[in-house]
Length: 146
Image (cartoon, rainbow, N blue to C red; front, side):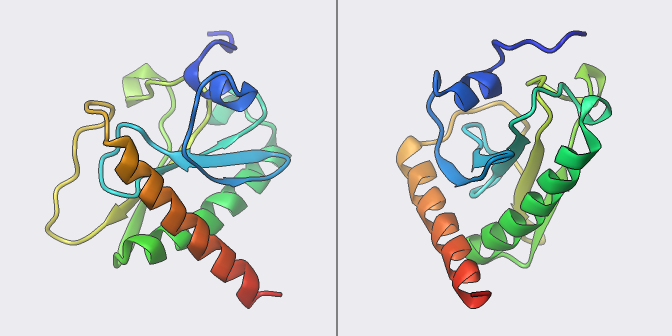
């Protein structure tokens, strides 16, 4: 399948669709999943137009996974959870619904079930509050390394 420049993540990158952003640099963007599986569910995408892991430029993929690591630590702190699940799906058969490479960061607490993937829209006010908390955790982490 050829990369579809009209997918929702490409539209977000162009500014043609809104997103609750938590982190951005020259190569990546992190934002809240509008159909979260748990509160704080965040997505990290490369700005490079790759459909999946197999299409990704290895250098950009390396940078993207570093951002996943950084954002995952902030999500864990902001949501005050003991763990996070990192998921990355390749192809419709694997459950991929947006065909732009992306990593899911899903806060996890033992014994708490996750919602189904891509089923129900979240309250946008709650997403904005979660984004603010994650941005604050990222800012705090950056201040600790200065």
